[in-house]
Each structure stands twice: as C-alpha cells, then as structure tokens.
Length: 225
Figure 1 (cartoon, rainbow, N blue to C red):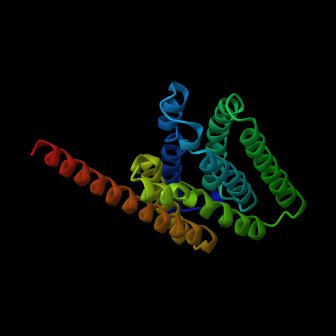
Figure 2: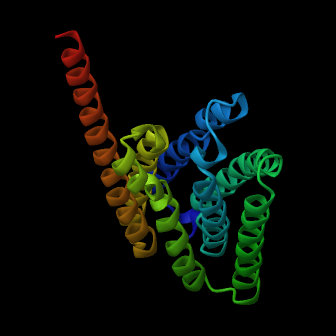
Figure 3: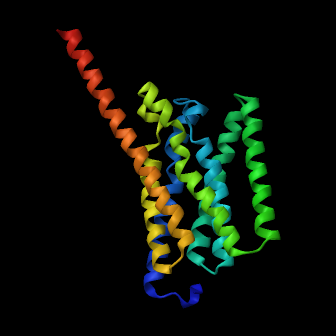
C-alpha cells in the first residue's frame, strides 16, 4: 500500500506514532543535561541506547523509503537526526575523559554505519532491510536494560532512564498498532518485543525504588529509636 493510497486510519496511526516517537527521541535531554553539569558520569549516560537508536533509525528510515511508508521514513529520519546530535555531544564529552572508550564507541558506531550502508544500498530489498531493522529495534528498546543487573545489585534505580523507558512504551505501542493496521508483521514484532522489554525495566525500576525507600525508612526509624 503506497502512502498516497493510505486511508485516514493509517495516516492517523502514522502521525500519532511520529509525534510519540519524537517524544521518545528527545527524552535523553534529561540525562544529557546532568552529564554536562557533571551530576552523572558517562557510564551512567545512555551511550549504548543512543548508538542502537541511531542505527535503528537509519534502517527503519530506509525501510520506510523503500516500502513507500512516508510516516515510517519521516519519523525515523527525524529521530536519527536528533539522536546523532546527542551522540556527538556524548562522544565529545567522553573523549575528554576516557580515550579508550571514546575510540571503542566510535569504532562500534562507524562499523554499524558501514554495515548498514552496504545492506541498504547494495542489497536494496525492503524485507532484508526490515529484518535487519528488527534486530536494532529490539536492541534499542532493550539497551536501557544493560544496567538492570547493576540496579538490582546496588539498589540505584536511577540508572534506569525511566522517562526514556516510558517513552519507549508509548513509541513501540503506537508503531505496533500502526503495523497491525497496515498488516506489516515487520513493524508488529519488534515493537511488541519493545513493549515487553520496557515493561520489565519499569517493573524493576519501581520495585527497586520501593524497596530502597522502605529500607531507608526502616534505617531512619531504627536510628531514631
């Protein structure tokens, strides 16, 4: 179905998804302001999430372009641009503090871009691009989960970027509904998995937060008594 032939329902789902996706892509501004102010370290910033998001956007933008799905192309093109700005800020900040990890992040990012370039422009097939995009889509939504082990171990629930995770649920749900409406299984599967991943992260966040607050209250009551 070409974008020009889309009915009103498809257009509504597409533009709602685009608006929510924009919210998701700008949520890293909160931890980045903290990073710039020195309130958190680069290890606590969503570096992996940004790289996965950027590579994901490139693939989905290409998929939308090849499949004549303007909403998918526009949302991910805009998201990729915003994310790239965050990545540049992150890499500049990181280069001033840890050369090794700065080089590592640059190599991973460059390798991903080169691989996607060859995939998109030498094997021009929407299905192949869509399958590859699925992989990065799941990685993008699961990326904040890399810190869940540390959160469970240390009780520092703030390591999970809660607003990005909430934004991920809104974003993945809207695009999953768009995929259902379009009958596009390549859009449904990764966004359904994104919902599951984000819900697990939110559960861990509030569980550890509640546990930490209870422990702090018990310690305070113990000291007072």
